[in-house]
Image (cartoon, rainbow, N blue to C red; front, side):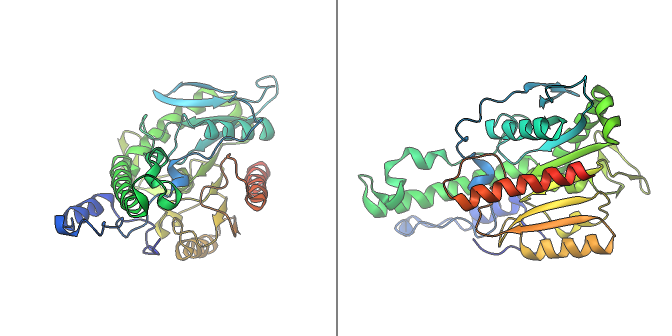
Length: 337
């Protein structure tokens, strides 16, 4: 995967789609399938769940609504008789109904003593996944279906191109001006519904994975003249940060600008040489946080895939161990703040 522009970890989906249309190959070139567009995309681990680990059980929370938004809420077993704190969990593209995301919320609730609110950031429209590959024998490893290696290769390229286009269109539907109002509606309602937990923690905590990771950074900013919910703030109006502390795992679509104005202490779980969160953006973000006096922690994990920190089964023992370590890093940071 090519290295993206360090100023932004992805390009505008609308422009990518336009370029695809202009560069469509002629019919005579069908023997050489056009590769996917050469810009960073959400990887498979952003849009598809890993298998759920055996023996972990079913999610313990409930799907409900809060502030008119669909949410998953999970609470510590002893709440409300025992005080808890409020944690906002912002997911990657697999969204609200992902079993693994719900189980991740349950872990933070049970082990960290949090009331966890996980909103549907995508309004019932999770990211398209890559299941089509597994349904076609020609596309399976080695192109071993009846069509032979060439047909397998051709179909794989066609699927990758189609999937890339679908993800681009999905990203175009779920931009900051759509997602931030959803988060603020849920935040406002959660502060009322769980005022005891907010008071006990001295504010709201947040954890985010992949796409959700970027929004933890935005919630940790002090922002001026930005849209909040359905209200357009005027010039010179400053709001935020909206969280007390945040934890971010393998964020995507992050730019250097997302660290400007950051005030809330954050911990970052990063993947080594991650094209979804390039080193240039990470280093620039660390510089900005140091310059702004923001308390922060950054850990880079080698030999793991993007998306590794979310609940999911891996055969590689090194990835399993890194997954536990990353979760411990995030939980400890939240509890220490």
